[in-house]
Length: 132
Image (tube, rainbow, N blue to C red; front, side):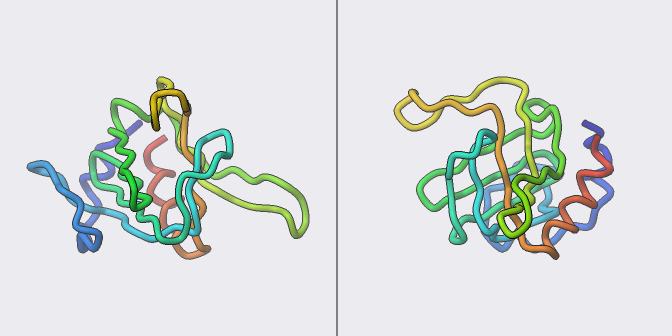
């Protein structure tokens, strides 16, 4: 991942008040339609919050926060489509370099799906287009 691009982006308001590390800035933040595991399991709905900084992505469903270091943990991010006609859906698939366990340690995932509205999907795609 070419994360140097993220440092060139303007800082936006930290509207979800995520705790930032020194030198870190928020470059994208929104409430998704929902987010889930890379395999399609549900993790959060419209009350969730996604924040991308110049170093990390944090997905908060109100009960827990999944944090990914973009340089260390993420190997790919791309738009995917699934289904046909009115059942068609688009999402950003974030693929991790290693499997993560969560819950009581029995549930595993190898990535995340972020379902955004049209405007946020376009903005996120613009950003990740410079990373891969």
